[in-house]
Length: 212
Image (cartoon, rainbow, N blue to C red; front, side, top):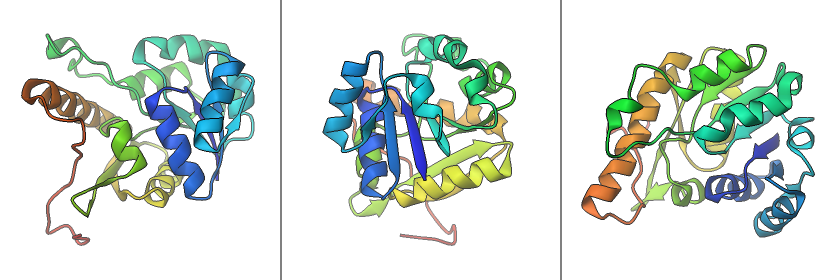
């Protein structure tokens, strides 16, 4: 597949490297063409001069930017996202007062409202960049959950997730992004509270029909 990744931080680079290794054509954009070139060189992917260029021919558009930058990115793209599959990997994080972000909404649903002609799916937000590059813990393949309302879009995301090493799991409609975002926040909070090394990932223990 052709994967367009917006964002050159740890998550964007991890998914770019993993996607390239899996045989996908990955194009990555950043805050500047120079940063995109730097990230592309580090991940064996292609650099885009703009977000518009990154999404133009993409089968999947991965939104790998901080949650507070989402509206700015969406506003700059406008109709370029019509008909596109958007993979939302963002998390709102408030460690001191989790209730501020665990409010019965989700970033994925917000993105769908801002880009109503796109097909938004939620994925990867529950995983750390280290696990996106290597989705195993102690030899166990981690689970890759995908939530979305459009079945074709969800299947594309599940295919991508499986190709880079996760066990793909359909988590249901886009409203389930609320649960996935809570899982992401929980993983972050656990690392901080316990001084863990940011290497944990999610695995649903069996019997689930595909034990590993």
